[in-house]
Amino acid sequence: MRRTVRISHIAAFLFGAMFVVSAQGPPDSYNPYAFRAADDTASPRIARLRRDIQNNGATAVEQFWDEVKQNTAPLIEAIPGDPRHSWITFVWRGSASAENVVITDGVSIGVGGADPLNSQMVRIADTDVWYRTYDVRNDGRFTYALSENDPLTLFTDPNRKSNSKPDPLNPHRFATGQTYVELRNAPPQPWVTPRPPAMSGKVENTTVGGRNVRVYTPPGFRQGETYPLVVLMGGVPYMNFVSVPVVLDNLIAEKLIPAVVAVGVGGSQEDLTCSPEYARFLARELVPWMRKTYHATSIPSQTVIGGSSLGGLASTFAAVEHPDVFGKVLTQSGSYWWNRVYGSRAEGDNNSDGEWLTRQIADRPKVSVQFFMEVGRMEGFEVQVEPNRRMRDALIAKGYAVQYQEFNGNHNYINWRGSFGDGLVALLRK
Image (cartoon, rainbow, N blue to C red; front, side, top):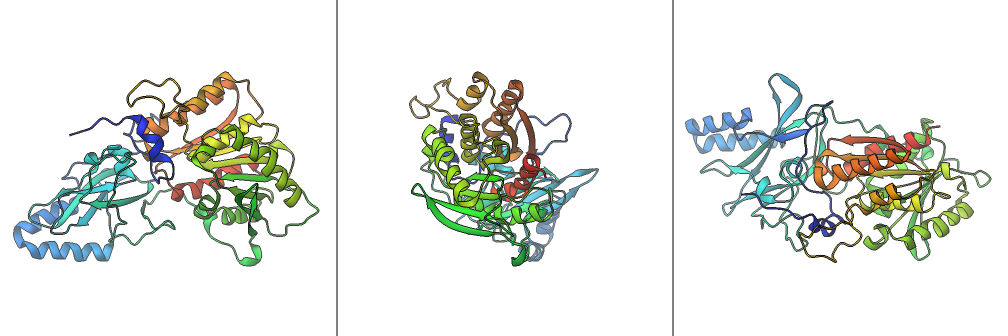
């Protein structure tokens, strides 16, 4: 059974969510497929368990769970003849009342989309073993959760009551508390390891225009110097979970970027969805305050604005609205699907105002702004990957300089914290 997912659900779902949904599109011609569903019989370990159950019954099941506890979950197994991919098998020890188990987030959402019916696990008859296998390229990194007796309402339903929990058999926890998978060829993240305090910058919390902001100053910050500026949407969560101060400390110490000052600022959904008032606050109030208080530059080509998800959308809008202030944009999984008139039409109606900002880019005169863009393959082909590609194409067609990349992961800080440094180096290389 497969249900139709209407894109109009997405606006309520994306804001504040940890993943985005839709089905995966076709693989790139220059790269092997990023992920796909695997047959229920693909996992050698599950196949062996089935044979062992026939011979030893419940004893085989207990031995299996003991092995999983020792080796951790999910099961990651080599695919014979295919060194680029691995089988990943999620397992769950169901309760006596378990009627279904759903995998939420990560590769399951990339494959199955917004409908949890497409991400259900299989139970081995007369046991408490539930499992599901995927075929994933070995550069994958993603978070996930498991939901026993899931309500089976769409992940995009704003009234959904999820039973999702971190995988109790997986000890790998991200700072958000989510369990994650990191395959052997996942891109390295060398800039998220903290340096000694003497080599670390300072972070201060304050307010500007009634908004909470977090300001980073580099090691050796001096009042008499002028510094390039990084303005980041998302405020405290983005600064914390992307490890912005740590990444900046490392990039500066390695002389990959100049010493910079940075400010993280929060915003409501209304602020981040192409609000002229919010863009004006950033350009005409926050940046001048940073110039006056922390000696930030007044040169647009040394001023970066960035963020993830709706923060990427807001950053792009602010830059094209105020190119005299923001000369560079760092957008991570930008929500370019956004529709200015969302909610004003009935579900399922054809709405010509979708991807509003992309059409604005195509219609407006080019301004002097440079872009770094990225998006995750597991975020959803129709909802996230295609809109990001169309934004990229619109920018390039207009003559903008764009560096674009796609990672094999989901809509999550665990990916953005690694590539945030890539974006800064691309835009501010010393």
